Length: 432
Image 1 (spheres, rainbow, N blue to C red):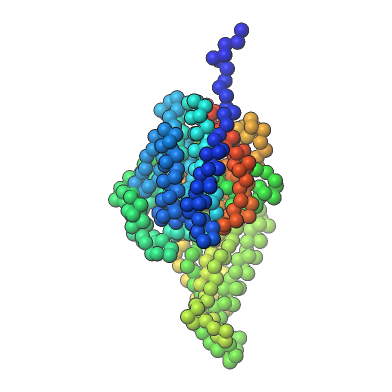
Image 2 (cartoon, rainbow, N blue to C red):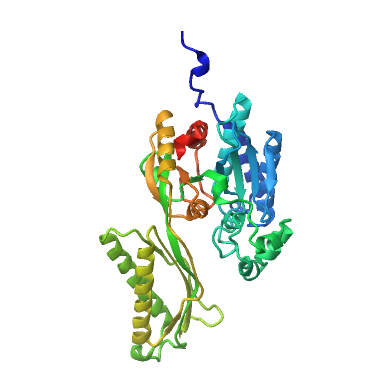
């Protein structure tokens, strides 16, 4: 006769999807803007979101902690005190954005834990849901603020020089206002060490169209693209009369920037022809509203440049080509380019064992998944860059992201939560 005590424990415990639905609704109601969702980094909307998830964690009986940068940790103990799994994402949003970007990951973690609590199941390792601060660089022009601070990797210089768009508040002031211990942050006092985290997982909506086009609910990330960014680039020429200034003596900043953009697009095509991963985006272009007019040659143009790749070598090659192109245009058109401060992030590879574990969990749930790179930056890159075994689940999302029309079906969220639950209940040694 078989001994029932030797049978493997169930891994098909249902996540609490009703909890997630309720919290998505509450987040939308509490943080809606006139058009879309606004949860400013270290601002009122993000504070509301953190209060909501803290309340739910306490209701579930979880252990709760807040670090010096105001990241939150909500933990369900496991059968061992060994390093466990951290499920995390952010709760801030871009201005007038969507309700699911970031929040889907935090709520998925809570839905898994709530399902375990309801079933009376103790997981084989501690499970922590981490609500991360200030991921959206639309507010503060720095990458992964909350997750870097969690590891003591946010610099004192950044605290005093990085200011929030719209109100000019420094990062130091913002963290202090939110109740953080900014002096500890400045001294590099991290709450986490890489060896304390067995696995980091970030569920997130896909911010592109791939899963929707392929009619698949779920993707497993293979790598996260790094970036090369110039947020405040300027081209300077000379203002002149539009009707009296011959072409050969014009110093037209609009034409110079237009030529640069066209050359960058051709360069991007050449990278693609060589099967080199790259995206190039000029998201902002403007003349000076105080000086420009219908009948003037433009003497100044401001623009931005966002370049991403899963290869550091490709980013470096692009930067060299950009410098050469700009020099040629400067000489030919008698203008000057100033690209301003350069910021960058390093490409991050997801851990092969974590990818395999997610794929196995999806197979057990009989859910098809797509292995895919991720072009958007995510806090998972911080963990991966510090050597923590890291993985990401992407959820199908209609209508793009960073806009009010984000649309994630709760049925797709449920698929992701089921896969996450199975992963969390697999013995830790299977994920290493």
